[in-house]
Every structure is written in C-alpha cells, then in structure tokens.
Image (tube, rainbow, N blue to C red; front, side):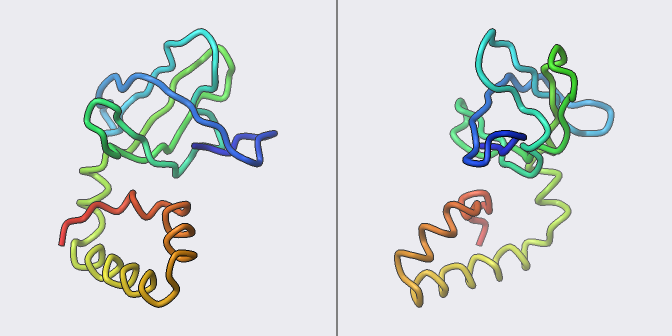
Length: 122
C-alpha cells in the first residue's frame, strides 16, 4: 500500500518482479492495463510476493512518467544484511513487551505501521 498524491487513505499496486539490476535492486514492472502502479508515494512500503507469501523487499524508486510503469525494490536480503540481527531481535522484544503492556490497541497500530515487515529471526 502506498500514498501517492491525491490518495491520503492509500491505494494498492501490483506488478511483476523482473530481476536484479546492476545496483542489486529488483525491477518491478506493472503489466496490467488498469489499476495503480508503484509510483512516487510508495517509497518505503514493503513489497509482497504472492507466490512466496512474504515480504521480499522495500519499494525505493518509481518512474515518474505515466507511460513508464516500472519501479525498483531493495531486496530483503540486502536490507537484512545492512541491519544487524541483534538490533532486529532487540526491536522484536520491545514490540512484544509493548503489545503486552498496551494490549490490542498497540497490536493494531504496530501491524498498521509494518510490524509484519520485520522477519522473525530470533
């Protein structure tokens, strides 16, 4: 889900993961006729792979011309290699404690803010 101009409540976009570029980023191509494409306003959003049933990266760049329906994602393996596992585990522990202390309200907020993006590695 992204928040491009004119869509303050957010919209969903879809595309096909094409492969890694020389930068290590993965190109996403929108191949459908209608619907939203990944565009500015989607930066930072998780990229979900339906086949793998999981997050495979984070959207970081998108074409700005309407006829260019491509975007790029930083793959999850690159993201996790840049963020030490100890920090991820520490954050997961804090999230668990927060959920216990605040209850359901915290759970809803954390899920909305991307809790599921942090893989369970601990």
